[in-house]
Length: 342
Image (cartoon, rainbow, N blue to C red; front, side, top):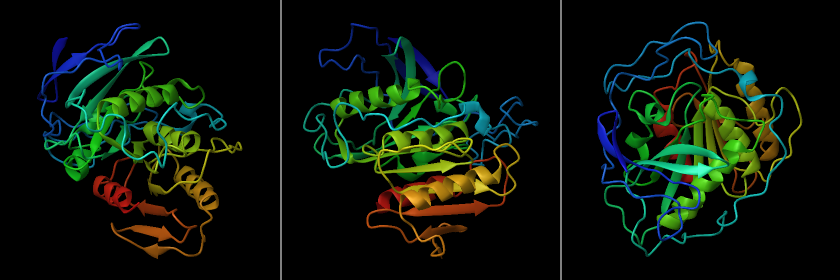
């Protein structure tokens, strides 16, 4: 166990080695209590340097400032390769309709903190935030947040970037994973799909999760991956939300997705890193998948979002806004409100 500090929080790293693990077989060790509160709050994650696919470095947010965050340092659609891939098989357990997970009614095997998990020969890391009043007898929604290229889970977790804690930290289990050393989420291979499967399996075994309410969101590279994940794990996810990205069909290639699902999409019309047309292509894909009326959009909160009329149990919200390659200030609350409605 190695004590570390992440954005001002004292966390403990639980390292999982192949063939090792705790008695419950999760391959993870519990950290000391890191506390569910706090958002990070060191200097902002707002694209502090160039080289993330954009031409200019974004301005960083101030400490705990709550600014929009990851500006024009984002990741272009070409990063993920040429294909979103065909639908893969879902994880061994869980799925929509599964209800309370195996971890319900048992002492939690996770606290708020940083964990590592061995997947496919790689050691992968992720941050877990558990509600401060967590009850082992209450199934909680779980939200996975995927950062943009060359950022980290800790940065996306922060108040001046993804800021999901402000909207859902008291009522949902939040997970902020890290991409591989390449810095971006893998869209062509199954490397990161398998990472998601492994995290979800471990967390549903070790915490009380409502397996009917598994969600994913992401920005830029993380948004592309969220769309690909929604395509390949539509039988597991209840809904997804992507910002400043595209997919699941990449570079115009056809894809075969597991199942339609509710989708929330935001894209700036002034995005010079991932073109606005990429977001429009994503919108068009999900409107077709969810059998929506493309002419039936009505204004919804938060402004400037609209909702389309879709098949029963499905929904598509589209938020075209003025900005750059950023994570807009309305995103965290808007995404969680959308997830809560499903």
